[in-house]
Length: 89
Image 1 (cartoon, one colour):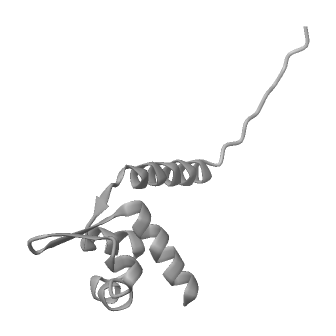
Image 2 (spheres, rainbow, N blue to C red; image 1 turned 60 degrees about the vertical axis):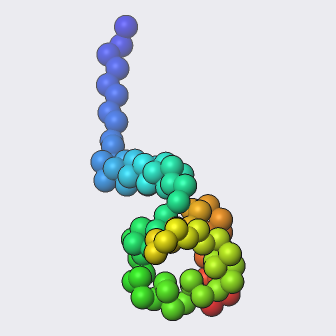
């Protein structure tokens, strides 16, 4: 038998980025309702900007769930509506 030498090069940073991306996608799929604070965090936009530019749109207003002073939105339909609005900019 001939000796076999196998060398594997791993790009640790690329693997780490891939794992973080997949984890982020899985966490986002777990959301059912989000509030303005979480929306701001996910969209990398300020709460004020979201209020002014997105929440006044009728497509998002109809998705709003309100209880007393608290507001929530269903995650998946909200993200679809935001994608439509942003693509119109």
